[in-house]
Structures are given as structure tokens and as C-alpha cells.
Image (cartoon, rainbow, N blue to C red; front, side):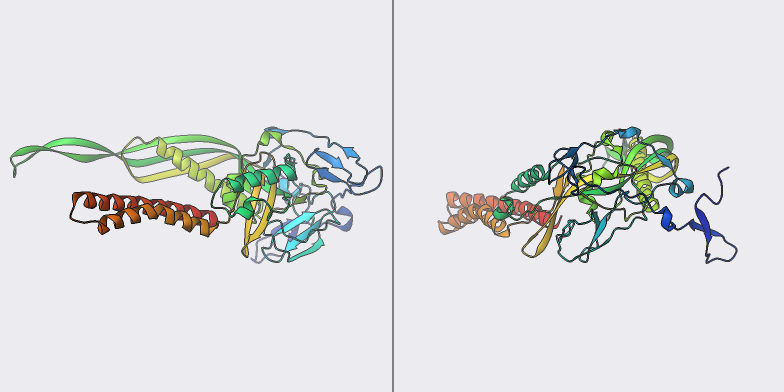
Length: 426
């Protein structure tokens, strides 16, 4: 039987009489998290993690120190959902950090002390404040190091922006893009075994013959035969990713979420030297609630795939989860926020695989010009048919050819406008 209250927990005020409440004991001054500074052993200057070389590098004298990578991949330790696991976890980054707080979007990004940053990586605003970095959150256990540098990320973004003719030319030229900001994004990963039992009324369509006395003939009709069916599903979930931040659109995070978790390494403060990082603003329990919802939705679809009938009604599913465990990790993301005609646009790139997602501005002059060109042939030909002697078969045919082209142009116009609106609002 586990100890209660857990280690490092103390009694605190309770709002309900007769109910005892325990909370983590506040850290004493001498219990503050272990802090590490990074200084060059040759010249004493501050070192930073090099995205290009994958180690600590001094910009002043060129000293390079590769990190001692301990690749654990999917074998990284999991933690059960127990109070003791949280109580015994380390806190903070393990190195001194400063928080950059954006007054526009509310994002809080941690940077090494002395970093001169005047823009928010998430929205591009320059309304930012710096404060002493907080160290009260859980320390990540594992991370995936950055594998893309600034030049590579800009090349990927330029190719992506240039892949659509709707993007303004000066945005395609990359002149409006500043350097990408590398930021470690918090993620929770969850493992669980799901067991589900279902039952439903399943309908099967059958064709039957019947005699229609009013018409004195045999006819056919389709009838649905209903019967109760049941089944079971067992599915294991390994490393279900749930973002620990609300500062990036969940749509864009899903689009770049092809991380290779087999390259996870044990967390070390060295990886954060010179690089931004975000602490989670989605705690463990709310994140696990999202994970459970995703598992339930997936198991629901698996149950429905077992049903071979034509119709389903009165579907019921009972879901149980076992062997639940979690990990808190940092994953590499490169962020670029830029303004176009007074509006902020954001691009995010997977710092490991190069997968990209984001918002692309639209040149509406180009869009409407293309729409006019699509409508022009139909308008011209149909008007030509009207100008000519309308009673002649040739003019009549010409008119309807023009109407047909006009309909096709309107359909193409709808497709282009839908695509353009989706790009501008995604």
C-alpha cells in the first residue's frame, strides 16, 4: 500500500468541512532546482546549442562540445498516473532562463538570460516583456534535438510559399520573412490499452417480390431486416501525442506531427542553450482528457468497422482503459510570424523532419483576374451567338456553347474562391 500523504505533500486549507486536502510542499530556498550555466571553457563567453552541428558552440572562439546523447527512443521511461510520480518529479529547466511574455497573444517563451529578443515568435508582435524565468513546472524527461537550421527552414518555407500561385510575389521572394525562431514545444505522450464492448441494432437491406393487385403485376421493393448484434475491440495505444500548448493552432500542429519518437534522448539543459522553449499551459490531467477523447473516437470507429450491415441504430459502447502511462517531452518546432497588409501570418516547421504548415496570404487581384479569364470565353461566345442572327441553327448552337462554358467558368470560379478563402483563413 502506498504511503499517504505522499512524500513532500502537506495538509492545506479545505473548502469542505470534514474533507482533508493535501498539496505539494512549497520549495524551501535551499531546495530550489539545480541550475546550470553554460560558459565557454576557453574564453568564458556564453555558449549556445548549434542547430547545424548538434552541440554546444561558442560564437566567439569557435569552441565546440558535442552533447552526450543518450538515445532512448520509444523505450523512454513511462510514468503511471500516481500522485507520487508527480511529487517526485524534478521541476524547472535545470538552467537559468528568462521568460518573454507577449502582451498581444499571451505566449510565454523561455530564453537564456541575455537573449535580445523584441518580437514574439508566435504572433510577431513587438509588445513583449521580459521577466525572471519560472521554475515551478515539471521538468521534461526527454526531447528530440533540432535537426534543421535557419537556412534549411527558410528554404522549406520559400518552396512552400511558392507552391501556390495565389501567394503575393513579394511574399514568395522571402523578403517579408525574418529568420525562423527555434522553440521546443511541450508535448504529453500517453500509452493505454483500450477494451470496448458494443451492441447495436443492425439493418440489412433485402429485395423482395410482391404482387400489386391494383395493377395486376409483380413488383420488387427493398425492405430492411433489423437484428441485434454485438462485438468487442481491443486496441493498444503507444505514444499518443497531445500538445501541451495552446499558443499554436491544433490544426497546424497536427499537420507537422510526423515526429520520429525513436530519436528521443534524455533531457539535458545543454539542448536548451541559446534556444527558446515553452513550458506547458495544458497540464497533465486536461491533456489526458483530450487523449481519452481521441482514444474513444478511434475505438468508436473501430467498432463501427466490425458492423457489416447497411444501417445502424441504438448503438452502445462501453470503453475501459488499462495500463495508462504518460511522459512529458519537448519536441522541436521552428516558428515564423510575419505581417502582410496589417494581418499576422504564422508558419511552423517540424524541426526534426521539415514538415511545414501555416497560413499563406492571398493576392486577391490575381484571384479575381483568373476568375475573369475563366468567365470571359463563355460570355464572349454566348454574346456572339446573340449578336448573330439568333434564329439560325449555327447562332443558336453558338449561344448554348457559350452558356456551357460560362457554367464551367462559374464552377471553376467557386473552386478558386473556396481555395483562396481557405488559404487566407486557415
